[in-house]
Each structure stands twice: as structure tokens, then as C-alpha cells.
Image 1 (cartoon, rainbow, N blue to C red):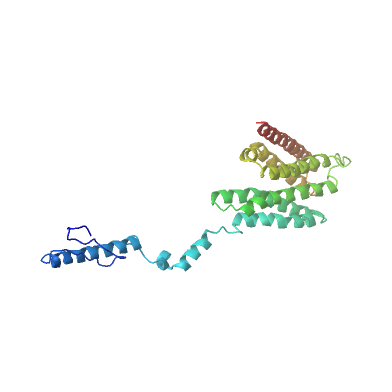
Image 2 (image 1 turned 180 degrees about the horizontal axis):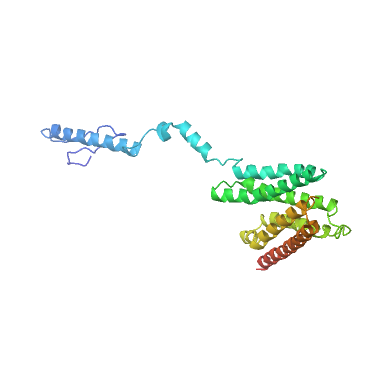
Length: 276
């Protein structure tokens, strides 16, 4: 207290009413009343600072159901593992042993079923990617499994075609005719898988260098078309088999050429990035 001031300092504790003391007795009641009003205001201010705003609600009422509401929201935010594109991709993996079984069936039925299985696999290869982009259903698991399913289906089909001679007298004695492009295609896929795995551990510029380009898409399109034609040409009921076989072989060699050329382009891009 200052000497001669006749006024005590204001004291407040956690929002309770403050007490104002004055030396003059005739103004005590009036000042105490004013102090009471100030204390009420202080209490309201303390309550406001504690609750944030008058719109504040207890935490248990958030999202309509409190903690349960937040847990259900977190569960909804968690990406699902088995989305529709992923299910289609898993279906292609499951179809590989079925394709192998039907390939060695005698008669036109086995040829027809084998061709249909591969054709459906080629269609779903495009369809699952389209659905994932359109409906935003892409997952990390699906991104990993999609190229694996494609490589399994293509590699299995190439190996199967190499085990049986072509259904055409002109190409029947040329046992290496399908072996050469098959080695080029499978070798390219193994190399690119290793390169992309290595690029994933490097910086973003290396990852961009191995991103899928238009040449790779053309390679895939010609590859799927040639294999479908070669599988269908095994049907003995098919007229002008040699024409279909020749067309399928030509597309397969074109696909092998695009595969090797795309590999060279990827390697050149990586080399330029590493030199910088």
C-alpha cells in the first residue's frame, strides 16, 4: 500500500470476487459494490478463457458420439485393402494356374478357354487402372501387385507357347522362332523390376526417370495383342491358321523390339541423371 493513498491493491484469485478496500468509510459500500461487479466480470472472463467461447461443447459430445465418433471416423479414414481394382488384380494372379491347366487340354475347348482367360486378363489389366484413377481407389498394395500380376501372366503365356510348336507347317520346324522374343521380353521385365527397385531407394529425379512412358504402353498393347492371337491360332477349326500365326509372330517381335528399345531409353535417362 502506498503511503497516504488510502487505497488497497486489487486482489483476485481464479475468477472469484475481488475485494476493494478504501480509506474513506463513506465510500466503502459504493466501492465494495463496484468491486463485486468487477469480480463477477472477472469470473466470467476466467470462465470464457477456460471454455474458449460460448459455443464450446465438452469433448465427449464431438462428432455426435464423442470418443466413439472419433474412432469411427479414424476407421473410415483408413484405406481399405481389398478395393475393386485390387480384387481384379488378384483375379489375374489366380487365373495364371488355370491358364496353364487349360493350355494343355486337348481339343478346341481348351484353346478357347485359354484364349478367353488371357483376353479377360488383358482387359482387366486396363480396367483396374482406369477404375483406380476414376474412383480414387488406388492403394499401395494394388500398385505393388498390378505389375506383378501382369508379369506373371505374360511370362507364363510365353513359356507355354514355347513348349508347343506353332500350328502351321511353315513355322513348325523353327523352334527358336518364339524363344528369341520371349527371352528378350522376360529379360527386359526382370531388368526393369530390378532397376525400379533400385530407383525407389534413390532421389526423386531417378524415380521420375523410370516412370512409365508412352513407349512402354505401346509395348504392352502389342504384347497382349500378339499373345492373344497366338493362343487363338492354336484352334484347329480356325481357317487360314498360318495367316494368324504369322501376324501374331510379327507382333510379338515388334513387342520385343519395343521392350528392348524402352529399356535403352530408361537406362539413358538414368545415366543422364547420375552424371548431373
